[in-house]
Picture 1: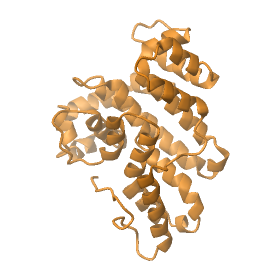
Picture 2 (picture 1 turned 60 degrees about the vertical axis):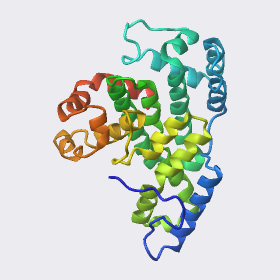
Picture 3 (picture 1 turned 135 degrees about the vertical axis):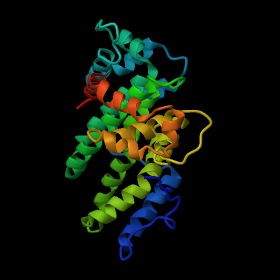
Picture 4 (picture 1 turned 90 degrees about the vertical axis):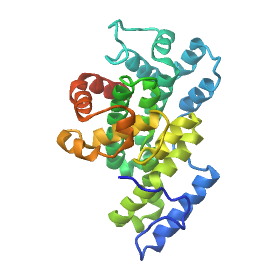
Length: 297
């Protein structure tokens, strides 16, 4: 599961005989190093949300005004605010400012990301990879919901940030798939594409998350969550993301998780044994389903 992410095109492992793959990887390396990683059709309102939330003194009223400028985003904020996971009291809110207050700034960011990626999945220029994008989105919402469930049961970890990291963890894969369209012949070879994605998605994902102005520890989690030997002084968002991705991968095969979690330091730091993991995977199904629905289909 662990691997070193190549820092440059020279270090990337690409199957021999694929000069096109080297060219593509070289382009990726250049884009990452120059910070030119951008996805198509990122909606203006999501950019405005990012900008308004960059001001730590911003009021909930100001945030609500930006969110309210787009009916689709506003609907997503309401759905999150009234979901089983975030609406513990069972009292639904109908005023946007109250919804923003209930879910907090990180979850407004999460709502904006889920809204933006939903728009992205419908973009005309990405229609050819609609099926792959749908699969990645289902994976992202599952990991995000599991990360929230894990984070909310851990000490001194912000569960909202864990959910945001979960939603963003495979955005590098979306970018690589979107860019691969320019190298049509190369990617008739599914094995080569899979290898480029495997080697590069974390680095590319980190660059995108940095570009979108998210905090450093979120981009770090996206970059490092597959490094199972990572050392950390205390449990953090990256640990939660590592565990959530593994749990998502073994959903329905819980017996295999116990074997695969051996030696993964994130489980040890979060004090998670197999019983606790199975409880989260099987005992929190309503919470996880509600969050996935709130994040959007």
